[in-house]
Image (cartoon, rainbow, N blue to C red; front, side):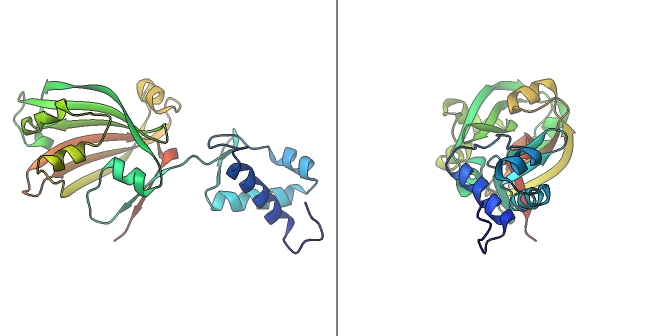
Length: 236
């Protein structure tokens, strides 16, 4: 630390941590030194360290986790909702990340009453169910369970680690309107394992019903989202 600099010590420390992240000395998800360790290493007061960390938290560079420590923030998918329907792939690209998917299962099932109601089909009608883990830069963001009517059977011939919306558009089906609901849930053991988080960790549950350009339902989807890697902004 340069004590004769016009740049305050806390700002110098914050800049040093930013540089460590930029140089990949600290990577997303890494725990940074404790306040006591930073104070000793850089020979500054705990107050100076706390002010530097507060600034980095405010800028979303690091995140404090109660009882665990302070960690370099992991890249998040940032969804800006402006009355439009976009895919996970498009969200990742807008966030500057690389999207990918891990296919868990895909095939025909019989609709139960709840899914049939959301999808607009009769109970016991054959529908398609596709389960995937969606990732950004290789990190799992959400567990996606999607249900499709029979007219989307072509999806089972597609590369399901890619964008289903691209497949829809290639078949002249344009995802045009959607209804979304949100609530909080807790991670089951299976969800925790797939999303690389702790069991009972609070997660965001999002349910989507999306229609095409003709107002016909394209899919009904449940998304269990690791909120550590996802941010939603709603513009009204």
